[in-house]
Length: 342
Image (cartoon, rainbow, N blue to C red; front, top):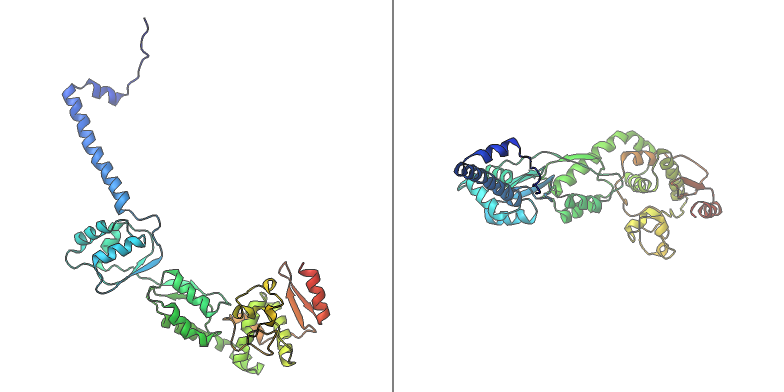
């Protein structure tokens, strides 16, 4: 006769099995009554109250005067700030009573569940703090405007307004690291950057005066140097080449200016037809400096522009390894192209 294999029962299971049937069923029922509601609560929390996986961290949400809890709940769900508009409305009612939303700019630094968001929006806990932004040397006003608009951190920043303000001041929006409040407007950003330019340019006031060229020409040339060179040595050498060509009435033939002619930013992308485009920014067609700076130069490029190095060179190029190659005449320049731009 075959016997069933032995089954080992743990101590807790043995104790339950030793209980009378009624008590055993009561204990199991009690466990289920405790576990099932807890599981349902956890499921409900993760489905409707936890922070969405795409929660937009490090952004600002603006609640305007007159905004309703219902309308705000829908917008928050659309922006992945809350999962359920209905749950958010209920929580607002629980936390805020009849006073509802409190208008203002709410800084969403880290992911928050619906409970945290509702509590803050019903109590005016804005958590506003400065936001650090770095504007690189060589960005133009359109790039700066797009950066602020697309960051999602400055809800009152108007890209078109900034571009309209900044266009006449191209070259004078100082590239630097700034700290702005999330409610910074286009006007605040524009004024801060132009004021910084005025303050920083004063550190070179004596050198600029000694250079004896108009500041407008200096900034135009510096904006070119910013795009054409990367090291202090190459900036000063190229400044010497371009000032010499400028003074002798030669075409500057600067490739970087084509960013404002046809949007091409790399020399290798330019064609012979591009070099013939009729634009005041095409320095292959028109002599002298462009009508405006082509970007916003940093202090290093401005300093190099007013301290050029005198050399016998009239031409330069950057080879495939990023090394500057110089030519005394056009023939040498052509030879450099054939040798270093293969």
